[in-house]
Length: 386
Ligand SMILES: Nc1ncnc2c1ncn2[C@@H]1O[C@H](COP(=O)(O)OP(=O)(O)OP(=O)(O)O)[C@@H](O)[C@H]1O
Ligand SMILES: [Mg+2]
Image (cartoon, rainbow, N blue to C red; front, side):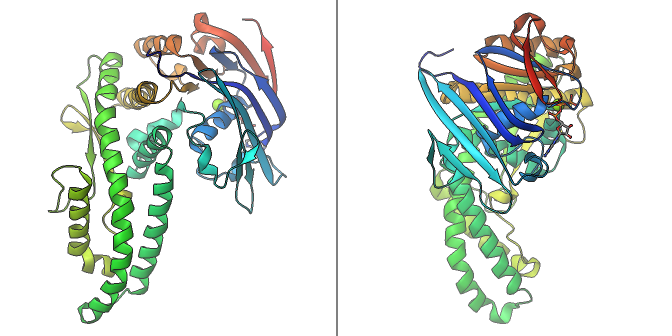
């Protein structure tokens, strides 16, 4: 791996009132860490907390509420993160009823999203089947997570875009029923929002296009290695503009901006009728294709798993190449894979500067690679020999 790119490692983790943990302190070495124990003991909860610090959300649930221990109003995840030869402390307090609060080296940051980029991690988990089989929003969320880990400032652009989108939709809704007669008056107000929607949206679409262009060959080659007998996997960007006649020819910002304005113009009446914004990155789709067929609806169960795995490992490679080698998290996945895919994943694990693997039984981890065994029993974590 390129020496110029630093490696990331979680050296310490503290969980307070997080899931089933009351007050947990763990110290991790580099290399492969196996977290084993019976079902429901708290294995995934540990890696979920690490993943949270990298994306600011759980890989399992949409809301933060389930992360806070029963009968408590806040939870804390704190970690010491090593990046190359530097150590950084990062912590976040999850609160019910008020905003979460994050700190870097014990100094509060104005917005939690400012801790993005401190810890980069890639999690592969059973939930990832949804990226392949679920709604487009699952694939957008996948892209957003990689994009914000690679370029943390994009999370601010996403927040701005979402805010403008909400306000624009509210206006469209309240102007609902507006017919061609008073279209002009409504349009004048709308165009103020259009400007901002296009400004933030263009930046997001250009970033997404670049991400997909960079990700596609990495994901395709990983897929070819783990599923050599399958049709080739390809990724392409199906942005909502390309479904209208105003498709941008290139993704240079000027072309996208122009196409975006034109698409809004074309859709004006339809948007007023329906009360929602019909074009923009919130309607994007990441198209996944195996040979000629879309993955969704056509791929077998095993193929879908391979696609999900390839998406995660390709993302790992992209971050490792362009930013810093991420922490690799594999939650309960070896048991699902056949021999070839297990072997491929084990090779990746062997190369990873730090990897966390959870499993109910020892046999479901690449035993020979493990440097540290942690046993979880009713939220008690103990280190043991193999
Ligand atoms: N907010 C919460 N407060 C208290 N306990 C919780 C909370 N959320 C989850 N739990 C408990 O945490 C446990 C699940 O932990 P986790 O998902 O980490 O299990 P696991 O060891 O990964 O199990 P499996 O092998 O089935 O994947 C469950 O017993 C669940 O009831
Ligand atoms: Mg689990």
